[in-house]
Image (tube, rainbow, N blue to C red):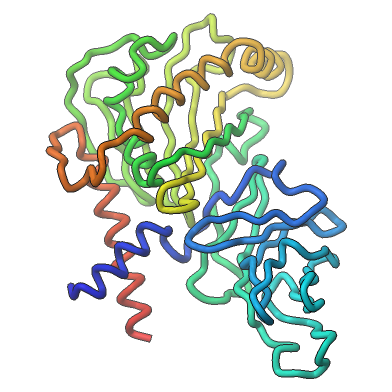
Length: 341
């Protein structure tokens, strides 16, 4: 691979793969006014129309580059505060008051981001080109089967490369050491053998001969967007629902900042069991879980510079290696396809 292509792949990995769905922000970020966000290598504006539907565009007026997020909402359209240019959610400039009928009017001059909202989160499609109908994003059953599961979304911003967070959640062994003082991760061996199994949409990385004692396995899935599933064993004192399931997604905001999304779920049907779980979570368990993720944050934000250049990996890191190879392969394929036209 030439140096130019190698640099392009590195930039693609840094800013986020194209043609994938990403978590953009928690739903509660978007209220009455447009919201400006820096993510995926660009500025994005997100807003709701009068019916509450969410829309997203690149936060740049096609006229002179003023931020559309400073303007006003006209349903599915934003009106730039600088010269009144109106840009619809599909990126088309529908009105240029200062020069009606000019070439800008009626052209698709602003990058749009298809949007979906689910599970207290706004997701956007990071397309390499305009698509009227984006490919579907299949979310895990813990977020879609609300008759079986109940969840809470926990959002954080960590000052590190988003790929370090992905490495962290596909690395079950760190739980035995980093979180050994946790109320639910003090059990299990500090030595383990791991097996890696390829699945239809990713892979599973699991300890051999140990299950439901600690953070013993993780699953990477790519179902239109990447997400990781893992489970933490819970004692009976943790209430109904069995193991504590975590669905993790990470979005690059800048090269040194990422948005971290942890949905914390349990399998509890509606009724007393779900009410008990949700009460216990808010009353006791949530503070403990924030303590656990804080341990990860402190380590990842204080990593030594250029860590990958100085690593010495061993068997416990097979999941990390597989993840990196998958992502690099996708980036190389995207860059090659774009170069081919």
